Length: 293
Image (cartoon, rainbow, N blue to C red):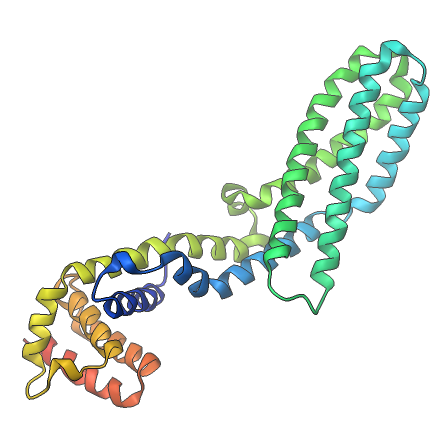
């Protein structure tokens, strides 16, 4: 999985800046706090996409739920009073109870998605994950339930129609529970956007942290070169953002081996975004000079 290099560079720059503000020590950077902020937009998008995917996958549950309820009731009524069918009734009741939990969780998720005043996506994500867990549990109960029907031939007339509904719902439950599985999503074109968000969030953090750590590990060597490039300019006057951009650019030029044109362009863009046009011109000149050596 390849992540956008410019995005990795931007996150790495912020980590480098945070470390430089702490005397150049990466160990003092609060990574969890940083990433909760850096990935907030992606996280919200993913959570919203997951919630909508759950509702889309389970959109046809209402009618099948009513049919399931009717057929479970018929089986319970038919076997009522038969002590030899006690285990059957208990299994049917467990399946019915878990079905009710799942349907209630779906209804709550639907209400949260439709609530335009909702703030944040923490509750939305928790509800989505609850739906996935309940779907997985219900799928397992169904797989345990069906083989046992063969032990009660006297109730075949009510159990066969029930089995047909449970099997149909198993396909839906499998699709729902698979929404949290990357391998499952990889084969579904309709979830390509959600998969891309999932992969981007998984790949960005280690890539950016590795780049930031590598730059800081070479900091002394890079600052020595930077001091030589800043003729007639005091390093102590250098803005910390500009200094971080220059260290990152020099690392990519000298250590990572990126082509000068890319390094100059990316450093200038970072400066323009994080420090302003005046700094962008200054950094363009410094890195341009370094590239010629």
